[in-house]
Length: 220
Image (cartoon, rainbow, N blue to C red; front, side, top):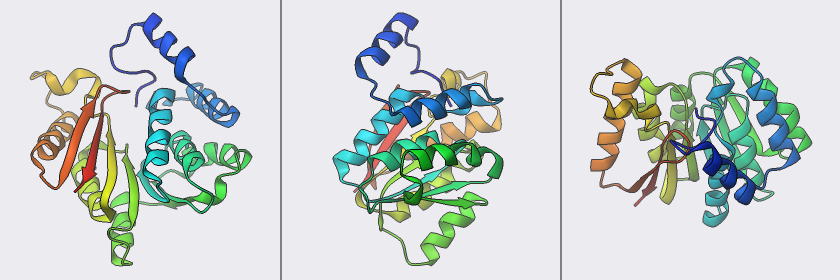
């Protein structure tokens, strides 16, 4: 939920965009359409989307899962990076929001790669585990309601194969996590997960100031 990376000056940010971003026409179209909508600031930034796509390519990922699809920009970025046989399970609760992205997925030729599951994500993830899909995914992305972040993390970690990577968005939460005066449930949930992952020896971890803060955890 950040339109540009954390605390970059506007000139530096524009330089980053001009000298790094390679965005498909469908990506530009979906991102701009979302920006004009109420709640459009929940969309990830183009540099984060491109970074996620690069990770998918570097890993040679074929199976991915995301928790929180919104209008589908992150799903589009990941699906475009997956090989032809790749699949992304996209979890969200809103038909209204996800339908915004579907025409752009179709125009980009990746709609068939995106398996959209509407409903509470914990139930969807539990269903995948009950279906015997533990340790069968390469890549996971979490960007949904913050109070359930720990639940999403544990389930995504169970779904990942050893060597798989989970990305968690909004881990800096516009700096609120570092402000002791802020104690709302969302901020506390993010703090709790940040502390947990720091101590979680099941993963190798790095927290990056990309977007609104992005944690990468590689399952050992």
